[in-house]
Image (cartoon, rainbow, N blue to C red; front, side, top):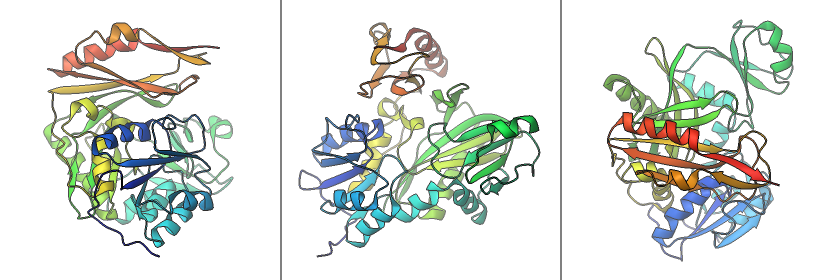
Amino acid sequence: MVKKASTNLFTGPSLKIGVLGGGQLGRMMIQSAINLDVRVEVMDPAPDAPCSSLTHRFVCGDLNDADAVYEFGKELDVITIEIENVSVEGLKRLENSGVRVIPKPAHIELIQDKGIQKKFFVDNGIATSDFQLVEEGGDINRFGFPVVMKLRKGGYDGRGVSIIKTEAEADTKRFSEKSLIEKAVDIDKEISVIVARNADGDITSYPVVESVFDPVANLVSSLIAPANIDAAAEKEARKIAIKVVDAMEFVGLMAVELFLNTDGEILVNEVAPRTHNSGHHTIEGNSTSQFAQHLRTVVGFPLGSTALLHNAAGMINLLGAEGAHGKPVYEGLGTAIEMEGVNPHLYGKSTVKPHRKMGHITVTGLSMEEVQNKLLKLQKLVRVTGTE
């Protein structure tokens, strides 16, 4: 029997939510779900995934296996994701059988392919950097150098991105798979906006966040909120992010990553149809965290306020140190939590390796200067090492 989809679901243990992906993003969503007493079930390929010990039902399975995804979700009321590298075919089958899927399979399919994603921006008048699609083994010299090369599919957390500065580097740093080439732009700041849109078309966005990247790991090392930009740039960034979500008629939570160029132009880099690293500070920094907001779109509740609770907030990622392996050891954490406004969030990962995300620490304060000083202290103080 085909279930009737609802845009206004009830909460409580009778409501069964499935999550594809059992990592830290799902773990933090479960923490919000506990407050609404909803039943969360999770599927992930790793038997010791961070969600495995917190969920009502945990299924170890291949997220790209359409049959496995369908079997996992067919008895659930609604299914969502914490990673976009999942079987769209399986999600379409679930949607056709009456299971509510958020975000929609068609949107996940669009975003999975960075080439299609970029063409969507162009087709909808959304400013983005010049790009060229590259077939397997194709030429990458259209723009000259430097360029940024990205795999069209499968890139995640800095993987699948190569910065090629000279023609001499092209042979060793290029990808052989289907990719896209982006013309390098003069970036002043990397910023992002998290936007939520529910099934009724209501939209809310969070204040713009400024990210600082680790040049070795190619991951966000820290962020500050609100971003240190002028009011006009803040307004334009949020306007562009909302335009992306509206153009797609997206339902769910989306992180829109942007470049603020040295000439003041704002370009969309790429988007993620889920909770995102650039929104972790919202747990302590905003009236409604990104995880609670995502859950509201899934459950069918009205969207929550995104107002700042503090004058400033920030975050550092806790990445595995160079040479770290085995059971994680969080050096300096005991001292860190003695600092006012410092809140650690560890992801429950059983093993550490270099540059692996093991947790994050959020910081709140009365001023941006106070927050930045705390972040600098924490970056020097806390290290994630390991014991074999």
